[in-house]
Image 1: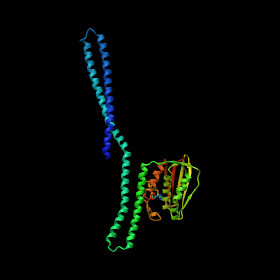
Image 2: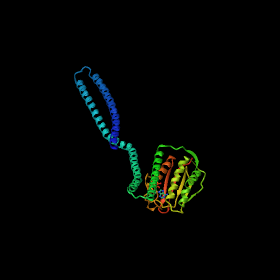
Image 3: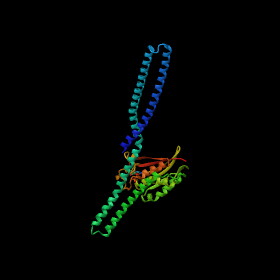
Image 4: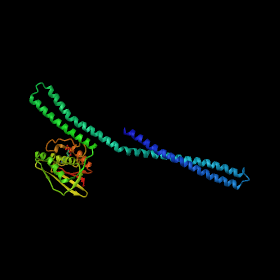
Length: 335
Ligand code: ADP
């Protein structure tokens, strides 16, 4: 699809170049011929003035040669312009092709990413659906299915449904982020951090994780409060998910030039240098075998966090040491 579009676009660019080139060539030719004509006319006048009494003698031969020279000069100009236009056609062709490739590259990349996203999402949706279908089919084929077995089947289906719900919520959130802008207000950073800690306190308690926050300066950002709490909650949630019990997750913030850096640091399993550059990709999940238990997730949390940071004109960075812990930093412009 992109190959034929590239060729079409190359054709359009090349046509534009050739129309301009031919237009200038035609004008150049007209101008050059006019100049030549005037030059030869002046010559003829001089010749006629020099030998007015002998219009059919030497001067006539000179005039004949002059006409011949005029014709051959015109042919020469035409040839030169033709060569120039052929060179422009060849060079312009290459240039137009490169320009067309360059123009289409971002669209092609976005298209490829979209296709990959759809394929990944379909794959993730298929897994729990297939599991549910198999379980139900096996149960239906069993004539001696007991009430306890039926209950356990329903329980398992419910778990799969919860995963599907989590996945669809993530997908919906990403889609909404692409089409929405956020209503921003001036907020006190400390209040946002406090609210994010409060929102995750129960989860931390359940996992026996200590949530700690360090007080910082009075700093302000222009942000949508709910979105910023959501962003920090994703990081806190991950920090809890990937940390052993009785460890600490620390939140702090500080001014750094014209921005504020909000840090979420854990003492968890860490991320390998191989995985680290890819964790913000949609559906990317690092090897889960090192987790304390099978941790549920679809690799959509960090991409959502990244989108949210970018919608606040900020960005997120991550540092990590395996088996020591990870630190995520949210950089936001100060208000
Ligand atoms: P998930 O739902 O899998 O947690 P995320 O997009 O939030 O998806 O994170 C992507 C991956 O990055 C996770 O699967 C995990 O491997 C890794 N990761 C994220 N945060 C942490 C952390 N605090 N400690 C260790 N690994 C992390």
